[in-house]
Amino acid sequence: MRSSRLSCPAVTDLTSSVGIVALAAAVAAFIALIALGVPHIAAQPGVLVALNPAYALGFFYAQPLVSFIALGAVVLVVTGGEALYADLGHFGKLPIRIAWYGLVMPALVINYFGQGAMLLDNPKAIENPFYLMAPGWAQLPLVGLATAATVIASQALITAAFSVTKQAIQLGLLPRMNIQHTSVRETGQIYVPFINWSLYVFIVLAVLLFRTSSNLATAYGIAVTLDMTITTVMTFFVIRYGWKYPLALCLAATGFFFIVDVAFFLSNMLKIMSGGWFPLLIGSGMFMLMLTWKQGRKLMSDRLRDDAIDLKGFLDAVFVSPPTRVEGTAVFLVAEPGLTPNAMMHNLKHNKVLHAHNLFVNVRHHEVPWIGFDKRLSVDALGHDCWQVTLNFGFKNDPDVPEALKLLESRGIPLPEMDTSYFLSRDIVMPSLGKGMSLWREKLFANMHRNAAAAADFLNLPSNRIVELGAKVEI
Image 1 (tube, rainbow, N blue to C red):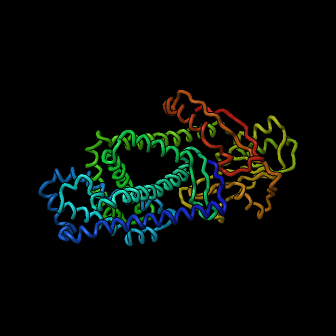
Image 2: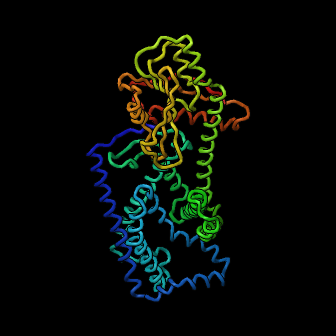
Image 3: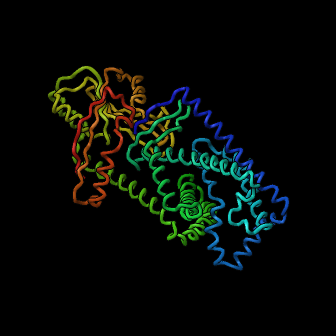
């Protein structure tokens, strides 16, 4: 993952300007929703009795089967709201609450009731109630405004896709990718080219397959309701095992929402043959890729651990008859602390020299968002001017090894910028029949590993001070 800094004041100013324009267009869109709905509600105020939930409960009681089937269409009313929460990690709760309760929800409710009021007056408008709410002269501008609003809403989900991808990479669920930072102020503003183009390909494919928005609504309904169900299940595990709340309280807090989410999801599953298979296929494919990458990494790590030599014992043996030592500091990146890196053994075998100071650095990514500089590293002295260093990063931290290693200078460990070399092992994965994954998955993992972004870019190592030594790993 190349964590490149493409940002500069001009780029940041442009980003801010685009954000202001997008905000203005979004506010205009919601004001338009209110303006369209109010006149129709004023003409048919009786539509507001639908706010009484007794009518919905009565309909369920009188027509349970029809009501269950209707849930698949009703859920489309609430879809789109998830875009508001896609950037929760970037903006926090307060801005989202203000936007939702202050503008978004009132605008949507007024517009939907306006559509219902119009249908009471003119049932034939059911063919396209939203656009038929507007007078003829306003329909084309409304199409333009709706298009702009769609683009703006998509930005939150695209940005969330970038953010989730970065965090999945740092949690070891996806291979490293090229990640570009687009802001000098906000670490969360990133661009992932591969994800961006993948989204484009799948969107074009979806348009070609479904052709109309009504056909696509089936696929969208399943995707959203399954996402809602997964979120509810995850919420239970967070409040129960993360926050340690009592079991009864956790079940009460999530049980009702789980029943509602499952009902919506099962209703949408009735449409699986008419397009619902599409998001399920994509989700299953992504799950298979992530599972293959995680299991493949474990197999590779186990094989390297089986073949590795204990670092302390190796150093003791080396210094019985020490090799020639050269000036400078060598930083060896290791996957497992306490094991001798292949890069060091190859360096001794071929170059027959050892640097004056040697750091064996293990980079660990934790399942917490942030880890501060006070807990960034731990150091163990190995003797002979060698140290075992562990660097800790949260899944929202940008892994910057040189920056983190500067903390060692206060501990008396020299790290001269122009006299430090970084040694990495570039492993080549060789699939084989055995106890690991099936052969086709091992080949898939080997291909993913080969095409992953370089570890040097992922760790933000200086490109002019890197030494890479290859090795084959059979899984």
